Amino acid sequence: MNNSDTKTQPFGTVLGYAAGDVAAYSSDYSTASERQYPKRSSYRSYVDNIFMGYKWQCVEFARRWLYLNKGYIFDDVAMAYNIFELRSVRDIRTNSRLPFNAFVNGNKKHPEPGCLLIWNKGGEFEGTGHVAVVTEVTDQYLRIAEQNVGQHLWPDKGDYSRQLHAKVTSDGEYWVTCSYGDAEILGWMIQTDEDTYAEPTKEKNPQLFTIKSAQAHPSKSNKKTWLNVANEDEAAFVEAMGGHFLTAVASEQRRYFILPHSIQEELERATNELHGLFMHATEYVLSNDELLKKFNLPPAILPKIRHSWDNRLNHLITSRFDFSLTQKGLKVYEYNCDSASCYMEAGKVQGKWAHHHQVTDGEDAGKDLFAELVQTWKKHDSISIIHILCDTDPEEQYHALFMQDAIRAAGLSSKLLIGLSGLVWDAQGNVIDAEGVRIESVWKTWAWETALDQIREDLQADTATANDTGSHTYAASWVEGQAVKLSDVLLHKNIMVFEPLWSLIPSNKAILPVLWLLFPHHPLLLNASFSVTAELQASGYVAKPIVGRCGANIALFDHEDNVLEETRGKFAEQNKIYQQLCPLPRVDGYYTQICTFSAAGFYAGSGTRADTSMVINKDSDCLPLRFVSDKQFLSEAF
Image: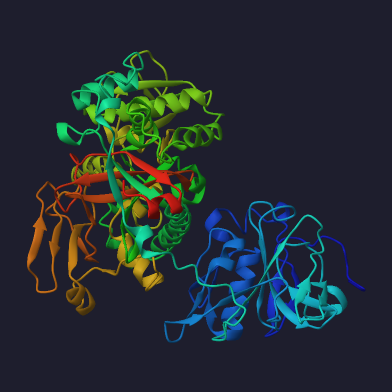
């Protein structure tokens, strides 16, 4: 790199300009101004109100360059190396899809100016990979423009950041060598209809998307007790279920479901990608007052939600996605990242079930969930004690005990509180427990919406105060020794709650139309709207309350507006959204939903919910799920 200045430039300094006069900036985060970038959302980069990425990372530059020069962008990815798996880009003007082909390093299809060069994760790019824009191609070298590799001015005031050695073999293969010996170049991505020599689209055998069901052999499972009731969580589970089983239907207590490993990989990829999409949509909603109104949140807590988003984005412990898996592919219904359930069933009970019944097919789909939760809690080792709050519901209790085990395994102290009995205000306006211990950190099974209902009642009693902007903020009144309400605890300014308050946004069903607005026709999403559109009418649709639990107040309609199924509940007065009808597959008499669980926003395991009803509800069973090899899945009749 001749005549280049190797001095590190401060964050945001223009390092050079690529073709189309697209600036590349220094990403030396250690020099970023806290005044200019006071919160994580300050780092989000937009052009024409279209999200490009985070300032000033490699993906942000690649997407911005393509948009400004070509008019199209690639979809959000969890990491830069995931770009190599994409097979289309979205033309912003026409909102149409264009082919985006991948060519491995050493290909007879040579890179060309304007294509993307992709690095695998590992070495210099550990965990993330890397992406750059190709600016010039010769038989001896290839020049690229990029961000987040070195923070120095580009050489010779040119339009490229680095020059990489290249070689063309006698049979026309083009090879590029990385400047870093421990990093691997996967290849290049070109928007072209010509797919000769391109990596094939990974279209799986449709049979792999067919959930299979099997029964454990009865002669191997004569003993009726198999959970260790000396463990508090397992004892609570047995009490709640009325026995050592995952379903009360005696004839179905040996049933389990089976999926191939390739679908496990698809579930992992989808979970990680969707978390990113929901986070982007959350940011979009919090920046759009008109959209935010559709979430029916008390205006008084909006400042608290925004503060939570700005300061606690990375504090998510765990969450759950609900999917429909059919031969048409994988489609997400919703994201439960506020107060979800089924963690113990997936992370512990289904594994013990398989051990007891001597089921050896493949592996337990939730085998890593507990360990991943432990690792996530370890990131919060500065917390002195976590108060675990749960209701008197038996399911919530075993769920809370299971999480307490993970907290304990992470080396953190905790106290389990069932209900709010004993919690009072102290003289300084803090909340203390029955032993006088100040509550500073909380993990809860209660949904945030329960606290919001209390706030709505309080606001009607005029406990809102105006701030300088003329909006309202919630202010709880307190009297020393007086009992507290749930909202007093969860919205206390000195109490850190898991899951964070911002999780209200992605858990609200109003996020689903926003996702479709931002990522129309994304292969993992279902069409969704705040009203019944012509497209939804044609496909059939589902009416869902924007806030609801356990499948309550959901109605399924076919394309002629016939009601296929309808549930009742306490959310009938809630505003609704409408989502494309995508019925669950029926497997041996059970409508079967696949769930994935995350830890800190990343895939951590899978499980199922199954019911004879088309709508999964509180009483739906969590039957075991196993992953087997693709070969075994296709060749055996379970």
